[in-house]
Image 1 (cartoon, one colour):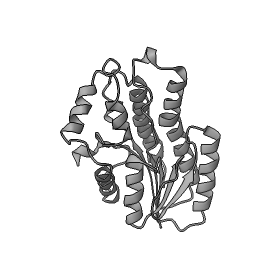
Image 2 (cartoon, rainbow, N blue to C red):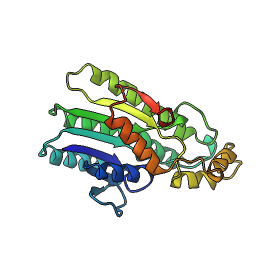
Image 3 (cartoon, one colour):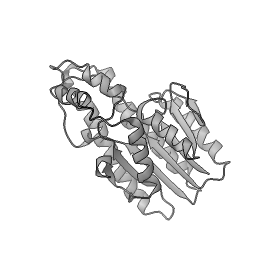
Length: 241
């Protein structure tokens, strides 16, 4: 049985990934606050910004998976938030903490539990984190988001380095999905120009029909994954495939 666990599987890229892998006969689990209309997907409602709830829910899920015959297992760290778009001095402490927790702390916790909980498995084991070009390119107004994604890239490299030493280690990769037509993009385009100097670029991408659809991103990630195009530690942009 091929298993995939996706955080934030109720909308955007996460939902498209859940639908794609379910269509390909994967056993799909979605961890998100919202329960939505998804065929053949086991949806688990959890607030991923709550450390204790996230830990307990994920541990229970991994315990259930231990009873299954597993051929491959993947964790996709997809859930995230852009947070307030503004210069750092104009962002509240609460908003900073919430973004860093969901975008960075939660993937670290889940990755830790995933590695520990799959040690007994001798099969394809991997963590794929949805990162962003914002990890390497600073955008004024996105200081928290850029920082959180840079952290995801370093998490990916470090886990890969640690797991490389092990006989049945977990492969760890990060993927930049490009600019995707999701609720996050709607949020970006509604920002005041004074808070986000790159605003016009994102408006133009939408108006010129240059945004990727979540479905296209999901299909590309599926192909990259199942055709084993990644080496442990690779951080890739889907525009390169």
